[in-house]
Length: 509
Image (tube, rainbow, N blue to C red):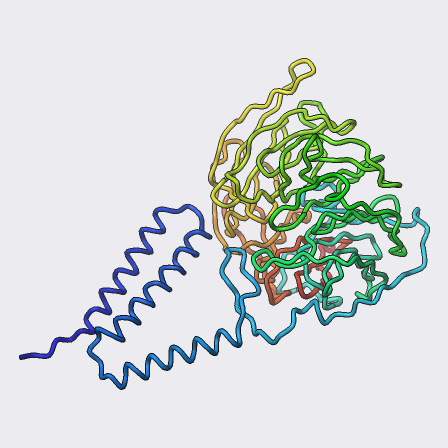
């Protein structure tokens, strides 16, 4: 009787694996869900193959016992030596050695102070989240287009604590937020050489294996002060030149702020006589305004839960208003008293992160990841009321962590990690190409800087006809979700381990 070759079942398992992956791909519109489901399928099928090997393969008993011992030994070694301490933007686990301390735990936490400078001498190059106008654009600089001839030069590099905060900058200093062990810190570095000028610390630590540790808000610079929001809801006002505290407010204890799953991420908005923060408090305290000099409560408005975006001042249908993307709505508030001017439902219960983008013609483009997509809202004034109309809904832009920008009538953004260009008038895709992961972008003059999730810097020509990558350099060799900042032609990039200053080549004529 011929011997039955039971190994023939291996191709069947592999074919089954492929079929399941195709079904998953067709059933989900989210890259994250596809990758996680695919990972689960591989684990289950691997287990099935292992059971087949042990009990049904027909291999010699000694070989099967050796295989069992090898798997058990490898499993024990992995459980003893590895831990899941980090995740990618697509929620794929990243294993690290158990005995290796977190990078922020070994950094110096000495509180440093500096001598004061006159406020009138301070020039705010990049005063807050998404730059001078809060739209991710710096238009008064002309960058060189050929990085092979004139590549960016590294000015300095420093180790930095954990956190996803962006940086703000004057023409002399860079201010950011970071976590060092159990101290949540606001730090000020010299733009010239990266040396630490001053630091302020609070005993506070937000920890999340999925979302990462530390603060995630970007400081706001105004009137000689630094305004920050910690990951657990602490608002600080510090002297910009010395780091000395002026006032602080715990929004959870004082105003009923409700901490979101991934930590407070709102970057403060400073208007002339108020500091505006999204905290997600109930009883008309979803959005609040504080006095910039004393921290005293001025007003509150709305009752939605907090999202992960930041307030920004827009004028729509001739009405100045503060637009905020919340946990379940997008809304506009009166900047004088916080009253809710309009509100639209938004999202599917997933994190809302990217800031809404104001467009010409009294329009607002809103987008989220996790399969949500984008909508365009149009505004008209009817007496003292604002009428909001949904113009279209599009799945062509799903901005997960990354903010998107407009240039010459087109909108550019990372659609689930792939750079895309859409027509904002109808939401149709003009092109899609170049996987940069869940990074960030900044429009500088007529060129687009895209920071890839893996830490590279890409130079893109924003052209509505096709994807044109002009150059790429490696900068941060690790997961990079933080927003960039620019002072003159000095670009600040950071992640949860390093901060780097690059001198960007500019046009000479």
